[in-house]
Amino acid sequence: MPVLERIQSEIETHPIVLFMKGTPQFPMCGFSSRTSQALKLAGANSFHTVNVLEDPEVRANLPRFSNWPTFPQLFINGELIGGCDITLELYESGELARMIAEAQKA
Image (cartoon, rainbow, N blue to C red; front, side, top):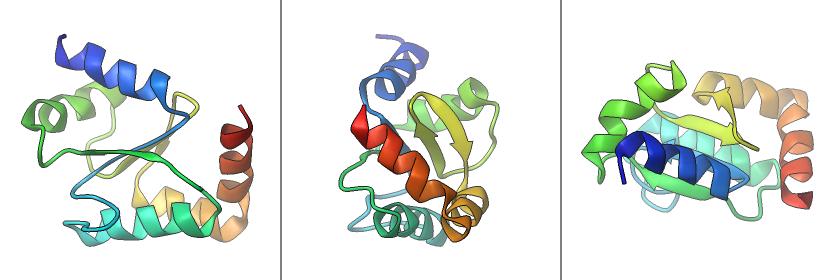
């Protein structure tokens, strides 16, 4: 399956997807660590992650797919939310918890 189709499939298959460096248990960068922590604190019981360090094709092509240059990248219900800064702002405002609750209901 071509890489852009694989990315699309991940986003369509899982309500919450975090493309990150490393894993939530072993993040390989501070931004990925803070983003996964914000998701957990906002009530994400479970969310799907893709370790872009283990998949060079995804790492190279996701910025082109999403039109977002950096990692991590958070998608909720198929929509790009953004990276670490935006996720943290949404968490602090309470909006992230609302978005997660809606995604987990579906």
